[in-house]
Length: 347
Image (cartoon, rainbow, N blue to C red; front, side, top):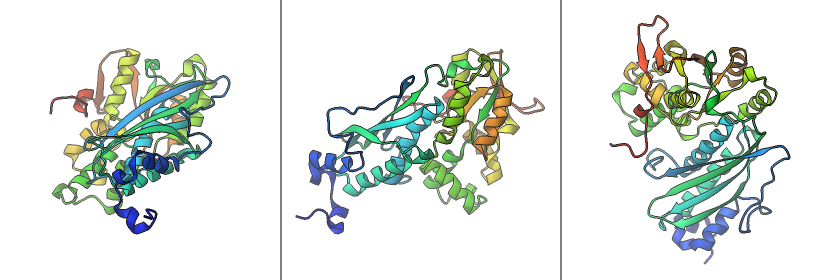
C-alpha cells in the first residue's frame, strides 16, 4: 500500500506506522549527520559552559484541541525552552524531543507538531537543530523537550543577583496570553464585546505562538561578559507569570520589591474588563517575556532594545516585602505567586 498518497496519509494513525515508522517520520526533521546513533554529539566552544533546560507539555493541562493546533503545540513547546535559555543569556545549540502518544493519534497531528517545532527553532536567526529524542505509547499526548545552550561561565543571568537599587524591567506586556486563552475558550462571552478584532488576534497569537526573547540574547551576553560588578543582571523568564518571576527573584536574592502599578500597562486599554486586567497581568502566565533586575542606565537601553510593551516597572528594595503600589501609595497589592497556576495545588 502506498502510504504516501495525500488521502491515505490524512487518515493514518500512529499505530499504522509503528515505532520504526514514527521514528523515520520524525528523523526527517533532524540533521541527518547528527541523529541515527545512540546519542548526539554537540560541540561547545572553548571557554563556554553548557546550559540545559527541560520542559513538558501534557494534553488537557498545557494544551487542548479546542485552543491549540498541532502546529501551535509544537511551537509553544519549543518557545518554552528557548525562553529559558534566553533568560540565562545562553545561545541555543540544540534540542531533543520526546513524545508520549496514544496509538490513535493522527499522523497529520504528529507532522503538524514537528512543523511548528521547526519554525519556532528559526526564531532569532539561530537555526537550532533537533538532535534527538524518544517516542513511546501513552494514554495521554505528552511532549517533553530538553534544550541545550552555551554561555561563558559567570556570564549567565541568575535569579540570585538582584540587589537594592536595581530597577525591574519587563520585556513586554503581560497577560496577553491569558487573554488569548480566554477568547479561545469563550469566544462569545459578553465581556469581550469591546475588544477590537486586531487586539483579539494579537492576544490569541500571544497564546498560541509566543515569541521567546532570543532577540535579546546577544546584547545580554555582551553586557554580562563585559560587566563590572556594579552592572550584573538578575532575572528569569515569566512563563509562570509576572508576579511569580518577581517573587522568585526576590526570594533567591533575599530582597524585596516595589512594583509601580501604572508602569505595568493595562489590558483594560484593550477592552478587557478592569476586574480581570490586573489579575491576568500579574498571574496570567505563559507570556514568555523576561523579567530582569539591573542598574537603571542599562535598563533604559534594554527597554529601547526590547521594543513595544517593555518598561521599567519597579525597583528592588532591602525590605523583604514585595508589593504593587500606585504612584500615590493609595492602592497596595502584596504579590503572592500562589495566586497563579501551580501544579499539584488543590482545585
